Amino acid sequence: MPKLRHIAIVCQDPKRLAEWYQKAFDMVPVYQQPETGITELTDGDFNLTLLNAAWLKENTGHSWHFGIEMPMEEIEARRPLLEALGAKYHDGVRDGRAVEVYIEDPEGHRIDLAPHWLTRPGERRQEPYRSWESAQAPEPTAAERK
Image (cartoon, rainbow, N blue to C red; front, side, top):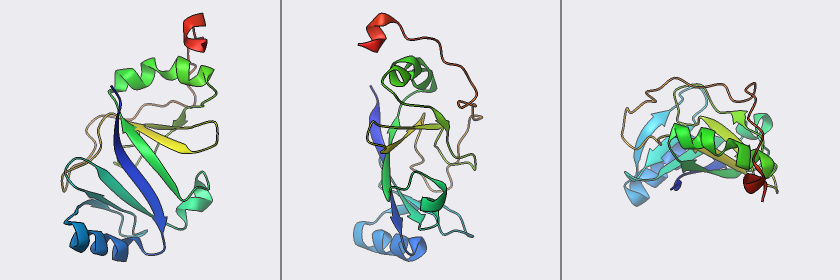
């Protein structure tokens, strides 16, 4: 079953806010981009990503999104159903973070899909990324379109 494992918010100063979450809730940093300040924190089970304001210019325009963890095979197997429901698969980030692919719900809210969310300091993605935007998904069956 897919599990909620990630939420991301846009903030003015990700580094400073990360320090606040560390002090306030004992969250542990697992990743930080020095040039942008984008920071990922964890409580050991759940990932909180603090994005910078520039992220909005390159992405969906929403100041937040969430992520669901599921095996790579399930991400692939759900594609016909999700596309039949109107979602389009988009390649996720390709810099060592977890996001394999993202979709948007009918109101445009971004949903990241990943086989594993980073929850330990220094942990990095282990498997190669796949390309989803250029791949052709099989036609959904009648049952999947319902």
